[in-house]
Amino acid sequence: MFSADIVFLPTIVLLEAFHVSKKLNFEKEFRKFLSDLPSAKFRTLSLDINIVNDYINLEDGLEIHDRVIVSSAKLLNLHVVTKDAKISDIYEKVIW
Image (cartoon, rainbow, N blue to C red; front, side, top):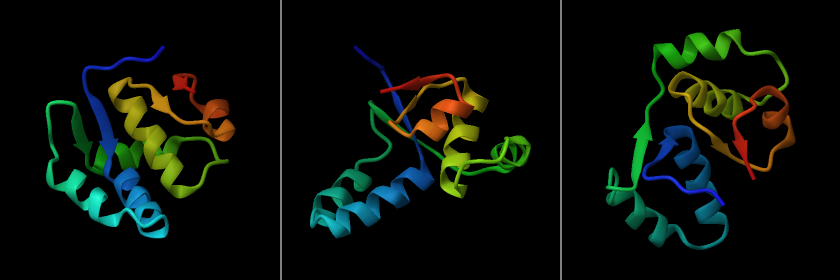
């Protein structure tokens, strides 16, 4: 079982989640979640030059947003929670 004191959310994940919230009609709840960030449990990770440099050096095979997620995780030595097999092929610290 996975447990974490703090969950780091790359901002690109929040953008993806926003589009899902609109599609599945829970945008109001998502906006409430955003308004509570950061919190004791959730922190955001902004795109910065360190992530861009790691992104450039990642092997090909991932879509843009997935490369940002993996680069963010690598720089902070964090796990990625995903069922995406392509991410698992490139980054070993995957949970799901």
